Length: 311
Ligand SMILES: Cc1cc2nc3c(=O)[nH]c(=O)nc-3n(C[C@H](O)[C@H](O)[C@H](O)COP(=O)(O)O)c2cc1C
Image (cartoon, rainbow, N blue to C red; front, side, top):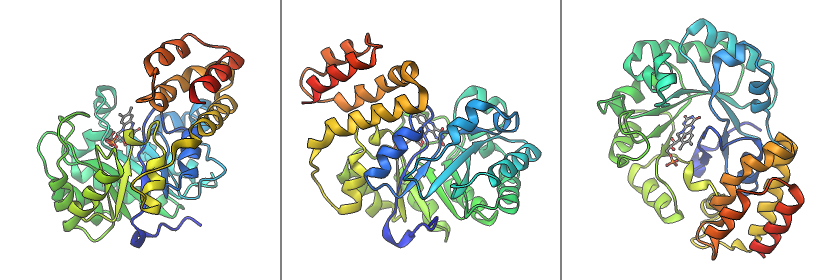
């Protein structure tokens, strides 16, 4: 059930803090994404038994290859977190975050900071592999902290025992906007035998095919390109250059319903606004719609507005 078929060019929904929660992952699974990742889960929060963190970890009913991504640096704490995850069913693997550029995370020597000390990174991966009872141990990385060293990073991760790598083709210094270096991803992929997911700025079906052809990576990982556009996974799975978006209304309504079930009425509606902004993008009158829904906090009023806009 947890097996990933790397011979079939699998697609993955990238971990996106604030977006890839249970409701959105459920929606993407309906559009045939192969692999889903949780939002980044802080190891420290997990071992403090944070209620919010355990809620974030929950797996959707249709998720079969669900990977929990952890962020941390202290090996003992990481082992404790892995042992907690060992007791939770439905998780196919544990992924180590080596890409987060946020100063608060970097200051704790976690996220992309791990790329500054590859020997430490290696010990962490070995520890996860040793203590985890899950199917997969994986790493999501950038191509360097300041300098680009994709081959060395990929080789280190492979030698430490990871089963696959996801590579975001920017350094930490490149933030989220610098040009993606697909050649660095290609070279990293060539250096290792384990499967690699190419990641960064894949926003259309055509771009996905280009990235696959160029990098020769086994898998493609898509983050922002799937927000408001979960259809992209269906296109990849079924090789369709165009897609029938006539279902948009029912997708939006189901997504809203899941948000309300998961977060309650108030927060469900507030947190859904950013998804609605994305779903409505490029539709007529979108800016008026966005302005309107930002002021709605009543469920029935929101439902009426959605009915009207998406019909
Ligand atoms: C809002 C936001 C939240 C993110 N959260 C995470 C995260 O929790 N863990 C992680 O490894 N990467 C995170 N990323 C990075 C993405 O997973 C991805 O590597 C990056 O956005 C590039 O891919 P894309 O262009 O397909 O979005 C985040 C990116 C954004 C924009």
